[in-house]
Image (cartoon, rainbow, N blue to C red; front, side, top):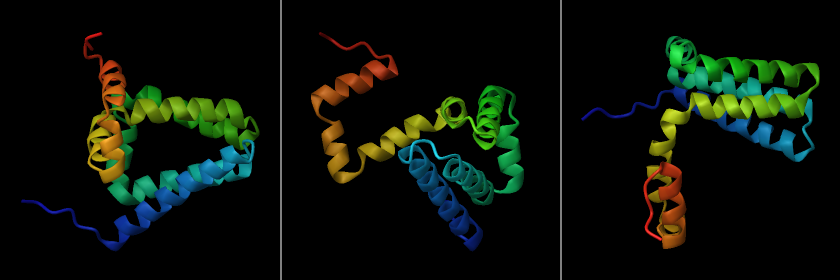
Length: 140
């Protein structure tokens, strides 16, 4: 069984990714402060690059099926830098969803295994919402 090696580069990458998400959240809370949003974007991209490696990161962002997400994330990042943070963040959010859409099922399984949050998500109300989101037919 292959284990997930956590070397120093990956630890630093995960830390930078976390700080990037934190600064982005702060930028949104402080009414789309472009300095915090730009810092969050830079830290997030640096963190992803360090976590998975430069070659894998370039390959991930340059896959043909990820072009739409990469372009919208890049244009959104540019708009945040030049001073249009709301439009830029909307484009970045769309790009983020498109880029990482393959990871949502894995994330859903992980969240359902967290003790308290998983129990809440197993409630029939949430189950029906999750099943509708996945496209499964829910009996009425």
